[in-house]
Structure formats: structure tokens, C-alpha cells
Amino acid sequence: MQNWLLPEYIQDVLPDEAWRIEAMRARFLEMMRVQGYQLVAPPMLEYAESLLIDGSADMNLRTFKLVDQLSGRTLALRADITPQVARIDAHLLNRQGVTRLCYAGNVLHTQPAGLTRTRELLQIGAELYGHGGIESDLEIQRMMLQTLASFGVADVHLDFGHVGVFRALARRSGMEKALEGRLLQALQHKDVAGLQVLAQTLAPEIRSAMLALPGLYGECSDALARAREALPAYPEITAAIDALEVACAHAQSLVASVGIDLADLRGYHYHSGMVFAAYHPGSHDAIALGGRYDELGKSFGRKREATGFSLDLRQIYSLLPGVSVQPGICAPAQGDTDLQTAIADLRERGEVVVVDLLGNPVLKTELNCDRELVRRDGRWQVVPLD
Image (tube, rainbow, N blue to C red; front, top):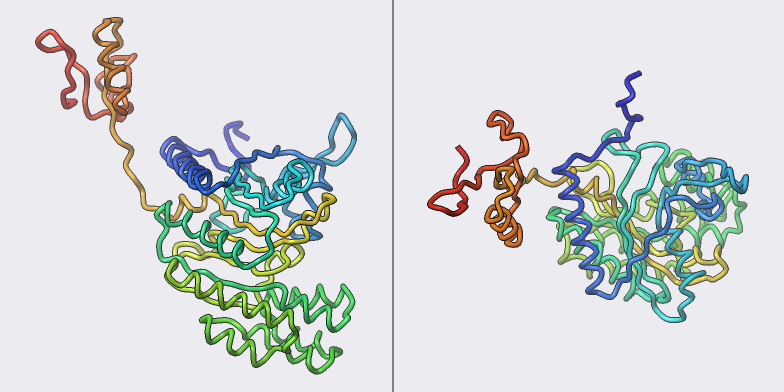
């Protein structure tokens, strides 16, 4: 096998893409900074139990693991940065009030999320801790949509869900965890026939609500109106529907369309309340995800209300139209003091100046220059490249 080959679904990032992604990352971090979010940079590698804390079999399968030669313990390469940020908030910062944190770093998955996706993602995101009200949910949702807009992503559709609805039905029924897991799987796959079989043993009110969930999707006002009719008026379900109405109204002016899907229980073991996902016509997968996860900090000894969002910059880049790299200016490889002064002045003004070390006219096209520095009338001047 050629030693220059990379593993499947692992790719190099070449110059044009790398520069543009780095500019997107810088834009995101500056947007976070001016809104009071503080940057953290957790390590790529941690003890496995620190990263696999949400009880999700999917997360476990998605995570690379290895044995630490120093301690003999199992280590894991992070597949998601959010648990690490929750650890930092709960265990290291230990603040009592609201904490806003952001991050940008690589994560690795054992399997790609889609046929066109990489296993090495560049995940950016923001997390807000210490506030359980709708205001923090709306702030995080707005930050996610502003981030997408700043990258030039248009025609975004935003879907809302709420895992609290299914949690309330499961808790009220007193069902065993095994049945809860099977019902969850059937709902995620919209398996109505399987759901009917699984729900046979439930109380009539709970069974009726479970069977209604797969159909409770669509435009916000219609889907939520049908949800109020089809679901029991438990206080936690009523509160969830009320919160979704507020979130839908808030998002209407920020995206092309907004919808509801109460059977979307993605991240059920991870999230505790409202969840949301952004979609784009150019991608089959969600392009940004978020939601509330008030229970996660408990694993690190300090339960904190929390909500956040994340996205993969490399996925976002693939949706954007190509942009031509600005051509530079070729300069001869000479030690002339005036030439060096001219080069420094041009670079100070933001121009790209490339020193042509080889001086081979045939290879100049590889330098991506459309102008050159030549000495005329006793001074160095920029002229079009012949």
C-alpha cells in the first residue's frame, strides 16, 4: 500500500479550504468574544469515562479508544467537545452565576455521519451554564443562526423538538428502562407499526400519546395545536409546548422556515429539554445542532442548567460557493534594500507578495500572482504580470 494514502473518510485540508475555514473560525470566535463568551480549549484525549458520560450507545460506538501506557487505563479521543466544556464549567471554573463558554477544535468519529462527511470534524460551538429559563435557550438559538448567517449560509430551515415530552410520558407510565429504550428507537425511526406493538401494555392515555408523537410534526402553529389536543395536559408537557411556541415565534424572522418534530429525540440520553436542528437544501444531514442538557454537569459532581449548540466547520464550508483566492505580487529574489522596503510596504497594506526564488517564467503560474515588482525609472513598481 502506498504510504501517502489516508484512512477512509479522513482527508487533508488543502490551502484554499484551510485559509477559508480558518477565517470562518476567527469570525466565529470574534463574534463570541464581543458577546461575552469565553474561549476554552480542552484536550483531544481524556479518560474514556470522562467523555462517555451521557449513557448513549451511539456515542460509545462513535468514539476511538486506546490504552494509556502510563496508567493502564482506557483513554478516548473526543467525539464531542460539549462534555469537556461541561466538565470545565462544573469542576474547574466553579462559578455560581451564568457562565458563557465557546470553543473550536477537532473531534474524531469512528464512523462518518454520512457518505460525504469526514470522520475528523472541526467542531465549533457555544455553551451557556447557570440559567434554566427560556431566555438562555433563545440566546443560544440566536447565536447559532447568527453564526450560520455570518458564514453566508442562507435558506436555513430550523426544526424544534422537546425530549421533555417523551420523558414525561415514560416517567408517568412507570415503564422499565428496556421498554423505554425500545420505544425511543421506534420513535426515532418513525416505526409506527413497531410503536403500536410496544405500546400495547401502556395505560390508554399514555399509549394514545405515544402513538400520536410520530405525527406531531410540521409547521409550528399547526403541529403545536395538534400536540395540545393529542397529548395529556401534564404540567411538564404543557410547559414544553409553551416553550416551543415562544421559540418558534422568536426564530421566524431569523430563518427561511421553522418546524416542529416531537418524535425527533436525537441525543435523548444527553439532552433534557428543548432541542433544535438547522437544515440546508445542500445537505441531507443537519448542519447545526443544539439543545438543553441540565443533567450533564452532575457527572462531574455539580449539576448546572445548560444549553448550547455546535456545528462542523468543514461541513459548512462544503455548502458555500467557491471563492477565488486573491492573486498576489511576484517579487524577484534579490537583496536590494529598496526592494525589501517595497515588499514590506506592500505587505503592510495587506497585499500578498511572493518572492520568486526559482525565477522560472514557466512556474510563475504556480505562485498565483497576477502582478510583479519590477525596477523602472530607478524605483520598484507593481506592474501587470506578462
